[in-house]
Amino acid sequence: MFKKDEYTIKSSEPVHKISKAAQLVGLSVQMLRLYENEGLIIPFRKGSLHRKYSEDDIERLRCIREMINKDKISIAGIKRILALIPCWALKKCPDDVKRKCVAFKDYTKPCWMHKLNNLICESAKCRNCLVYESFSNCSKIKQILNQVDSLVLEG
Image (cartoon, rainbow, N blue to C red; front, top):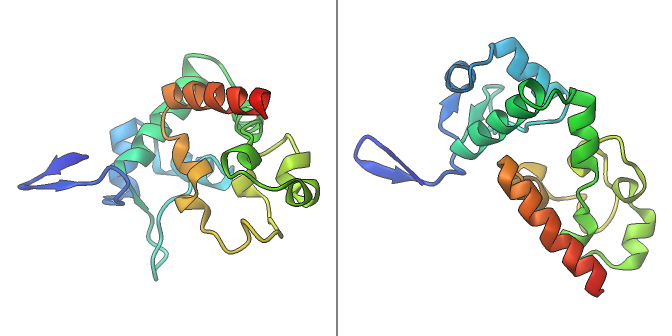
């Protein structure tokens, strides 16, 4: 949550235009569009082609920038890291769904970049998906992967 003027807005609420989002993170608009084209960020769009970004998106973009600039991880490397997120464990997919799922078999891009043709994900909006939302900042990624690792080891 953050304050804007006199009211509180949820951190997931898309409020920033692309130019403002780019400015807040220290990116060019073109670079932000590149991150979108590469599947690292999913902007909110409703009815128009105008992109909107939430505070969670801004935090996600900061995480991406940190991985690229500080940790020297390429965009392809970030996509591979995100591809390792066990979405099937977070969403508790049954074994028969996992076996058919492209995201379960592929390690080159995150699940939200795949055309998923299964009963659980095909009608879902990836921007609002637990898997995508869970990874809004760098510290959350490690924390959630540790939780999922515990679930997988128990199961």
